[in-house]
Image (cartoon, rainbow over all chains, first blue to last red; front, side, top):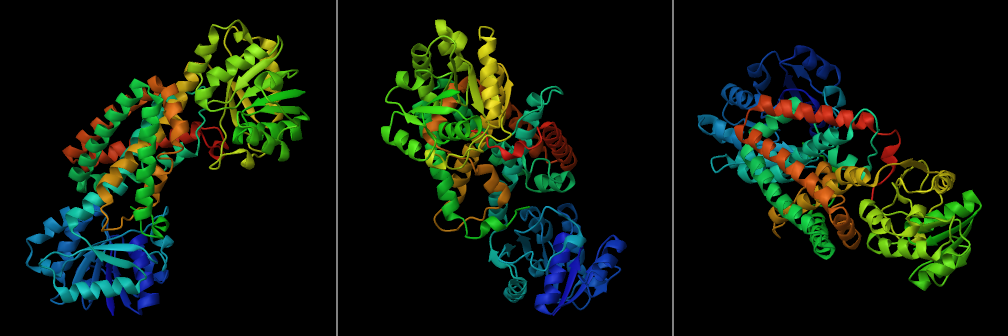
Length: 292
Length: 292
């Protein structure tokens, strides 16, 4: 099996490592930063460093675009143009609809199947690559009705060999789900951190913050360059989630102002039941995976 | 030293244990449930079980009311009426202003000093009492200008002997700070859990939730009976925080709809800076303590 990895950070690097160690693949890689690609080869992530996208994809059966969200539309188009019939091109971006639409008009769109592994780590960079990063992790795939079934099968088998659990989902449905379970928590963390900083940090009294607070702001301000792009790429779905939360907060605010402890306990009980329902419906082992 | 504990759950029980083991105190306890009080004596939390509040406070130098928030105004009034001059009465409730106001008109209000230990655990009940529960934990005290200084000193020394770090704060300031760092995160957790349950749980597809999501909903629906009372007791301050968050979410929603990734990255960067500022201003070791 011959694999091309375009963009060699934590995710691209871990794909390369896992493909070499578990899939027995020959991995060719390209990165816009030649030093990064060379470092990846030294770390055993790549067999060969390519100087360009066409050189990397030449002869590959599977091409994975693992650059930042902002760069993906250009990178995927370039990979599709440079590769031949019978080559499947995928990506690892956190949002899928915008990318799918930007590729849809291409003749080669039948060979593109978007992807999104629900895996990651607090640390970035090829130095932190791990062959086991995708063990048991859900890997969403977004084939369209134009996608070639044979290529979907090949990509699916390749990802399963890395240790992941591939699953097909529509790109719009994917982005709406991510808006709720990943992007919205980041928005709430940002807002809570900024509100608390406004009221608590006065330079005199040192604030006391407990675990519930720390948990809620843990992802506040996560990698601003990456998240600016993610929010922009999924802006409609995230804005809709924020609107839904605003409505719920307005109702909670009215309930609070009424000050009826029995009604507030009922509200708390409904949140309890919703939380239990959510965790019961979650895939076992899902707690191991960090959403980007 | 003679101590009376009124209400013997996790907090009251841990105060009793710590006072006996560390302060060499004689601890007399009362609980509306006689079985609970007897169990506390068996566990070594109490020296003596009292059958009533007056019996428990007879001869005590320090009285701690450790019942649920809803019961505190009545319990504190009863303890003040039953105890003699020179006896300090305190409590451990999560909100302070409403209680202070309900006691203010009493002649004995000079002997009441509200308290709130920033300590707790996932588990409740006297069986989970620990003598080290308050080690290094901030313990807010809310003396007023009518409080007797000598009694404040005695209470302060007693709590320090338990291992806590007592600190005076105004009751209104206390409740505003708790609204931001404790009660508001609970509101956000509730709202996120209920929104996600609405959109994700459809009985067919099992949802995938990552650590950031789980962290944000961890406290959703925490003990509904307790939290209905806490929200009701601090409803004005929490409602004001919710309003502040709604304003910030409306601005974030507008920023999202505009879809400018550079502006979104700037917003993300400000949240990052606010988070760093908050954590830098936090008291070292504060992450060990769970706010109720």
